[in-house]
Image 1 (tube, rainbow, N blue to C red):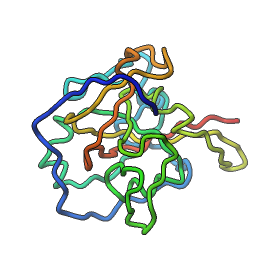
Image 2: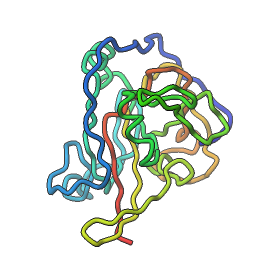
Image 3: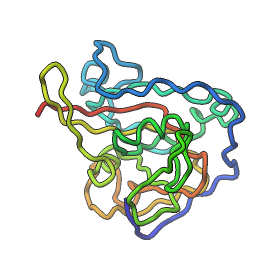
Length: 216
């Protein structure tokens, strides 16, 4: 995402490296053909206009990814329980592309640029900063096209534009908040709070795959 002045939030509880390996959940290669989405989901049928636009996790605000369909991602249960990620970690979003989805989900954590993957490849990101992971509590910021490109697919003869974003739990330790290089990208959170980065490994855990699909 970018640079800017930063303020650092520290936490004395570091993330622990998981000791168990669980078979990864299948990775969708297209928008799944189903009439049921997983909970929590933010599509209009599951999350209507009367519900809040901003939620709080571990004392930190994040915007609701309104209109996006959610599919659960299997996490390492032992790691999640020992670190209490659903109680004590922030909720953030990580914009990515369809070609990187499988590697990220199989890795169980968002990898750093240059990391060696279980597939045998290397995780490559064309960003200037190769030493941090960038996330955002704003779905609008995380889905900016330079990190979350718009792709196309055809389902039953209908063409769609779509983006994929990972909803994550993020360790509060050593999170740096940076000012957005794109002002007013989020109407619910200030510019100074929408771009986050961390240099801590095993600190950003994907929990849901969010898909935004629109007919062309």
